[in-house]
Amino acid sequence: MTDDHRAFVLAHARPAPVPLVPEIEVYQAPDFVALWEHLCRSALAGPPAPAPPYWATAWAGGQALARYLLDRPEAVRGFRVLDFGSGSGIVAIAAAQAGAASIVATDIDPVACAALALNVQHNVARGALASDTSIEIVSEDWIGHALPRIDVLLGGDILYESPMAARVTPWLRALAGQGTRVLIADPGRNYRPETGCSRLDVIAVPCEPAIESADVGETQILQLHPA
Ligand SMILES: C[S@@+](CC[C@H](N)C(=O)[O-])C[C@H]1O[C@@H](n2cnc3c(N)ncnc32)[C@H](O)[C@@H]1O
Image (cartoon, rainbow, N blue to C red):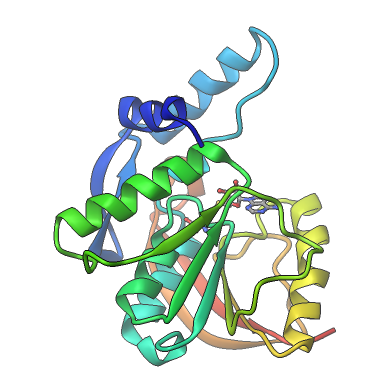
């Protein structure tokens, strides 16, 4: 992530509370769909095509998982946590607030990583995170790779398209088989597993109708089992 990525976030988004998790504020685009369309038009001018601005809105999965962690901090308190596909970092920030021992957040989009860093700074500045909060931000694709030692892997809304779900689900199940507790939150995307998991909670999440075609999304918190 570079100064350009940071400048892009600052130019297109501003801090706002997360609807279901008002304890946290993150940089959000005032009009997420307009920002996405703007990026699509700029991609027509030539490569490289920018990634969709997933970091610029509060996805139902991230909101639900962050709410779950703040209401049940024992899920992460004292544990080494990875927030995979972190986007704006709502889940990683909630894990920090809930008392995780260490937190790594990964996202392949460097702009998301810049947004995440700004969101951590912003929540420290407003007193919602301790000043010594440390979230390691990694802009790499770790699917299929061995991980640093973690106890809990968190994934908010990561099964949003078929190729991604097909790659990540076997890897997550393999990690579960190695003893990692894998918690994902999904608002009913087509690629959510229906078997081989335990449903821990169902949370009604306020949604942006222009994105989700609904005002509220019933979002499941699932623990993935080994294959
Ligand atoms: C729908 S967004 C959800 C973001 C966040 N977890 C939330 O709930 O607000 C999915 C995120 O996964 C990221 N992503 C996709 N493939 C990835 C990969 N292989 N490794 C890490 N992040 C990835 C995308 O860049 C995007 O930010």
